[in-house]
Image (cartoon, rainbow, N blue to C red; front, side, top):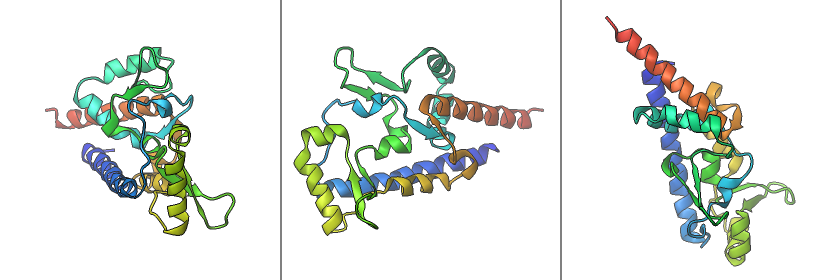
Length: 202
């Protein structure tokens, strides 16, 4: 991969995320589902997976800011599912993503997407977060009702993953534990940068 191709790939992934965010914003204008303040429940899932493709925007940013080596060390030493998550010191349900704007697709969809219904052929089923179901059962029920009765536009999990993968099939088809996907993305970004610098060397 050449450096200009890498930059174009990152831009295309980020544009897809921007489109996804606009659809989710529209969804949230129609239903009052929201994450509890400071909640980090979804980030503590034991295995969260992403493709190398989805981690390229973050990897590019880390390399650009000179933080790649520190993150590599955290990946090697940390036993956390995601090294970019910062948990609350006393409350296991709270924490924050330190790279929220560059989080991968699954993190963006969690609690704000739908899947094909297993009960109604051709139907769609809203997939709320466990915390949404516990704290906002009425809003969750309303989202499902509007999805079924009014055709509320809720992003489909499989469709959104497929759209991202189409940016680069080779980098997008395989999903890995998020830390490993980030490590490989860092490898790729640094390799592309080295090759680019060598090509300009006298």
